[in-house]
Structures are given as structure tokens and as C-alpha cells.
Image (cartoon, rainbow, N blue to C red; front, side, top):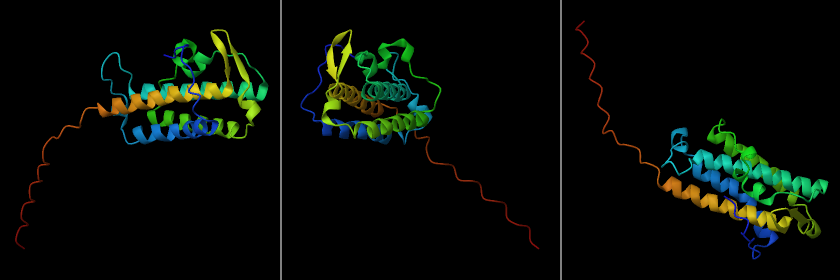
Amino acid sequence: MYASAVEPDRTLSREDVLMLMGSLPERVGDLVATLDEELILYRHGPAFPTLKELVAHLAAAATALDGLLREAGLEGRLEADVGATIDPSSDPSLEPDPRPSGEDLMRAYARVRRRTMDLVRGWEGEKWELRLQDPRREETSLLDLCRLATAHELGHLTQLRNLIALLPEPQDLGPVAASPAPPPAPPA
């Protein structure tokens, strides 16, 4: 869950944030694309999310971030719940839909992020410094919002790697038995 006391990493330049935001869906895809649906749905224990749940969470967070950046950057709406944008699981009304396949969730995450990147790459410096008013925390610039969202997604990337490293190994059922030889043909 997103902690309101988290501070954005201001050492990340705008270019760093753009590069990280743009590449995260590809990194996540690289990790989960080769896994079958059974492994994506594997749960290590009751307290652990499945890989599919994590990807669904990332897709929901990307959609929330895209929506907020559009509302703030294009429509001038500068009041928002930054925490619910970065971590939609903190708002039960924004729970991800579990029905799509892992592959569909990955495509949705990448598609929304490409749309976001198309929007923000053209922003000038003053647009990045627009301040969001959040009733639960102090003002946050759009650049700091992207820094926070990127840090949140990087944390989930690490979580995905750790969960994948712990997936059960496929069982070796031994050598495949040879088919019996066909009976000899009768003499002609």
C-alpha cells in the first residue's frame, strides 16, 4: 500500500522519469511473457499476490496515473488523491478486474503507458511543475507524482522478480517410454 509519508526521489530528472516510466511495461512483460497461465495464477501463500494480481494492479495504477495526468495537464483539474492514483488498491472502488488473462493485462498496461508517454513527452517545464492539491498530503508537482508512481512500479517489478524466482520447478516425469514396434508385415 502507498504510504503518504513517502517522498519523491528528486535526484531523478524528468528524462530519467520518462525513461523509467516508458520502459517499465516492457520489463514486466519480459518477466511474465514466457510463463503459462497456471504459473501466473500460482499463489505462494495466503499473504502473497499472484503474478496476475500484480500485473492487474500495475495496469490499474497505470490507468489511474494516465487519467490524473490528463485531467491535470489537459483540463487543469489540480485536486486529486495522489495516494489512490499511485496505489489504486488503497481505494476499493478502483480494484483491478481479475477476469482478463495475464497476457491481456500486460497489453493493457503497455497500451495505457504508451498513451501516457505520448502525452507527457511533449510537456514543457512549466507543465511538469503544476501543483496538485491533495487533501491527505501536501502539494505535489506532476513531476513528483510521476517520480512517486515510478518508484511504486519499480517496487512491484522487484516483487515480480522475487515471486518468479520462487515459482515451483516443473516436475521431471522421467524419460518418455518408446512406442512398441509395429508387428512385422505378413509375407506376401
